[in-house]
Each structure stands twice: as structure tokens, then as C-alpha cells.
Length: 168
Image (tube, rainbow, N blue to C red; front, side):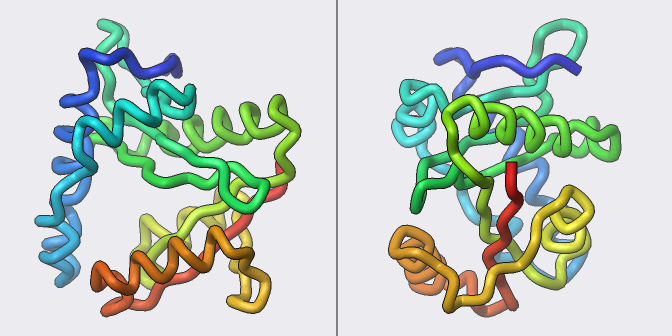
């Protein structure tokens, strides 16, 4: 699986991938998450323009997964990583995370961070297997605190969430 920068004309495909990946939340009683709309195209375009949007592509060069990231509190923060269910369980998400870690190292950033659901098997337990460690709320910088506040305002704290960090 090859990873490369997102092309502008692929931005709607990122939304399709996220919608498809989100459907599994219906199966675990989180329909609000499953039905949540993906980021708008203009916001996805900002990630692409900043050089912080990558896709994993199949043999036909078609995106099957993506990752977008921001710089937050001196680290590379994973804003979203989604793998289309047809391509799940092949190590693609981990490859995207490893790609982001390599980018962070190139940019001399010490870690990756992300926020995630604690009890969803393909969230916190998965990220722990990928080398992420939970961060106590007292360890969060202002950027991560702001992200958590926005998530709470959006209703995501209806289910347990946490911030995780992976050194690069």
C-alpha cells in the first residue's frame, strides 16, 4: 500500500471514506457518531494545502484510507484517520500513523497526539497497540485542552474519551 499526499480532486473521496468507516459505529450503539458528517471540503483543502493530508492508495492509485493532522502544542496531532471498511484489517491505518510519525520526526516534532474513544475496540485499544499512551488531563497543553473543549461542545463526551501520545 502506497502513501502519498492527497490531491485536490480527491477531497470528496475522503468524505466518502470517512462516512463508510463511520458506519461501524451503528453496530456498537453510537449512531450519532456514525451519522456525523465528515469535515467540509474547504477544511480538508486547508490540510492538503498545509501538507498535512495523506492517503493510502490501492494498485489503481485510488484512495482507500486517509490521515489529516495539525501541529498542536509542538506535536503532530492526528485530527482524523479513516480506512474504508473494504480495506480494513490490512495494516493501512498503522501505515498511515507510521507515515505521520516519520513526517513528525522530519519536522523535529517529538510526538504524535490524538483524541479517541476509550472503549471502542478500533480506537483507544488499537492506538495503544500502535504505541500510543494515554495522557492524563493535567499533562495537556492549551491546544489539546481547546480540542477537548470543542469535542465536549460537539457532544462527543457522551462516551468516554481520552488523549493519547506516541513519541517519534
